[in-house]
Length: 221
Image (tube, rainbow, N blue to C red; front, side, top):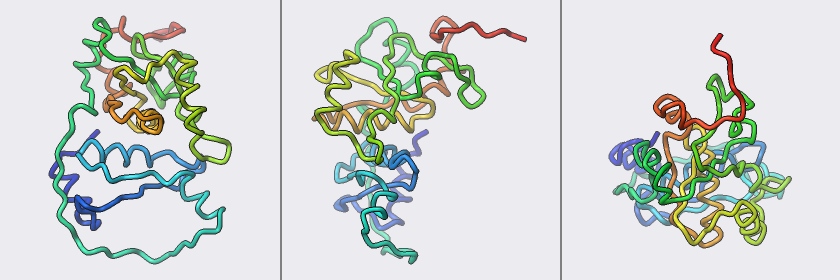
């Protein structure tokens, strides 16, 4: 879940990030990119637009022969002022209301088995929010771990009948891989995708049974 404005500002300020700093985020996941889109989205949701994701992640940076170091950076502290952009964030209550109102589209970035309810999700019974469309985050990546081309991403959204000209919210299990959907849409020229931060972890515990769509019935025993 998101930290407070004050906590985020204090943390990134101690990393030397000010409001004029252009931030590049990456991670070391074997897929190429896993957590970085979450960091990218967090900067954006706290009002910072000068942020980019390193395409391909650290593994491809190394593979392509770029310089690396084992030395730890010691940047001078900076002042960062955070302002939460609520338009990029959805709450449980807003998601519940949307089931009937259908004011915005919902895309779920989890693997198909967890979306369908045929695969346990780290101890939770799985399934999805009514009306959600499944687009596993890994399908936006090439085999090398780079983001697919804009043309390929646009075609993926079209195939799932997701209209990028209309409001869109992304969800997953804990609000991490949902940010891949936000990033993919951003690359296609849509910068306003919201993320349901509580995602399935919250929905499973709070939503009524009829609001948890699954393709299987699990025994109570």
